[in-house]
View 1 (cartoon, rainbow, N blue to C red):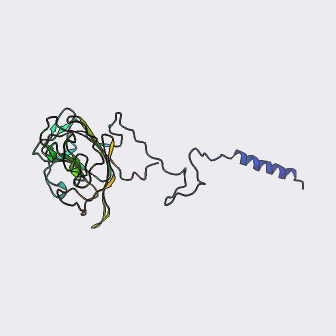
View 2 (view 1 turned 90 degrees about the horizontal axis):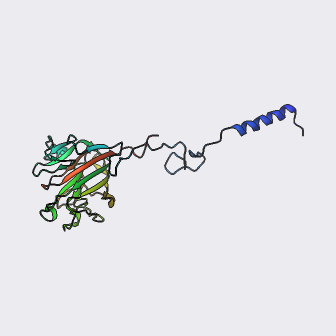
Length: 276
């Protein structure tokens, strides 16, 4: 079989066109791979949204670019006084805690303080320090607390050679879960909490997802996505009742002169669907 000159030329042009067609850039991914179960994406899909860029803090423990700075050591403008439960109609006003050189300090008998903003799922960084003048024992020694949504307490207490009940020591999910370990620093040194909080979810009166809490203290894991039994309660078993999706962060005043500094928070709503 012989091809005409025109047919030969046409075939050569087709070959040339295919050879010059742009090849897929597999540096960016693929579209001919299997689908991921339950997702609208292929394995290594080149159309999958990329995480948005967040600039980390310049120093370890520093607030990243998308954080809300709640306390930078300069003022208490992000906080209000919290003499009773604001979420249930309590009163509030200007914070009465002491502002020191880069820190704030509990002023006994002035009540808790709470953020003006409300939060749901979040990442929280907070640093705290116990008085060097050791006074009291057990729960009377440097007691305070970081209370997410005004309900879920990560205990603050002098952790250095201070025997107390396990689910009430520093780093405990108060009244529920003791910390895995006690990575304590001495009184007067700064302790660091990094907390990831997943807020509970309700459908009307029904709890459809409990709260989960992950806690690191001084870089050491204390709770790995631990399920909360419900809002903190003293000498009782915790249980859930319907609550708002977002609520205030509270720092507890237990009449001990605990200090706090470098507090920032990141909202995590939508973190599983990042921007491209």
